[in-house]
Length: 250
Ligand code: PXP
Image 1 (spheres, rainbow, N blue to C red):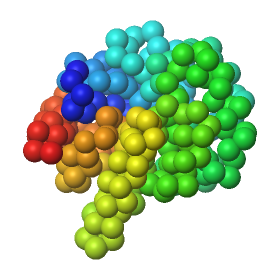
Image 2 (image 1 turned 60 degrees about the horizontal axis):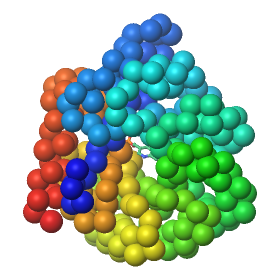
Image 3 (image 1 turned 135 degrees about the horizontal axis):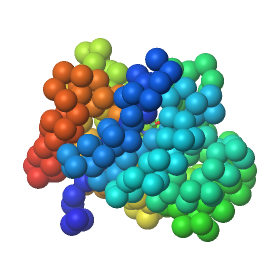
């Protein structure tokens, strides 16, 4: 992969959401992950939440066993999750905020407020060889804090940008996009690898994919939704095509 290329991480959490609606084994998120891999995903992302509302511990065991592309293990900064991550040593760990009552990860992590604790929290993960990423808002204070605690990667939260786009609030959308662009460049200038994700769809992925500093996008809910209509393989292939086209055009 050359430097200008952009990796696609496919988040398969919501295959597990559908499975858990009936409490059985179907549809299997590992099968979806293998299909996404074949369709051009460079990695698979799965979020093991404290309440296990979608991905379960058994899914993580099975993904570690079955995947040939890297697993990006999303987790809250809790002792329980740290133990699980250290047992599996996935390629990447992404630290996200987590609230029981939220429907999805609502905001970025408040790194600046918990700098000391998070520095100690991620150190053993880094020592175990996991690439540690911190999911944050496009905010200089959070980026500086992520840099100081020794994270190698930040993932910028694109949720507000995508929501504004979907609601037709284009002025707000453009302001968010500008913040994402500026903060991608700023984080890159500090030596951090920059990822982005949350809420991305075919309609709004390209402006973010065009940022030269962004190396990876993590996309889940839209792709699993789109798989209902066109199948997972074409859904992933189309996202890949749009990302590559945006990159080519710069
Ligand atoms: N990146 C992170 C850190 C996330 O928490 C999520 C949602 O689990 C995503 C990306 C993917 O967001 P979406 O499912 O909206 O594409």
